[in-house]
Image (cartoon, rainbow, N blue to C red; front, side, top):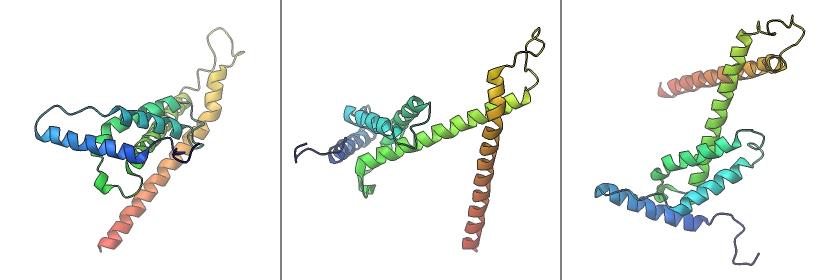
Length: 182
């Protein structure tokens, strides 16, 4: 790598400049009631790179729905990129802004997948009586259902504990706000 080349995969100053120019053009188009310019290709490419690289980090690597997470991250960027304001950026510029959008989208996807797993586990917990098919006299156990029964209890308890912790934290935050207000 030559001294003029950067080791970063995204040129943050250039991305910030492109996004700032697009944001200004977008605001002008809205004020003059003209068509809003599309998001620049460089921003879309940067968002894809950010989402892909972030999905390969250790804390996201083990999820089987990483492609869905990347897709959610890109959708979130298209929704929230319009709120970019370079004057409010302290450190990081457009790269930090896009990274935070993608990271938040990843966390939302994980939460929704965990809720879906909880719902499946609760459903299977309620249909435990269907362990065998008619005619097999119980000799064959539905191995998939048996797996869900064994792992479902763990999914249910961890999800319900997490909900309980969130509720307790919310109550504590309300109590702190009440103390500060008084």
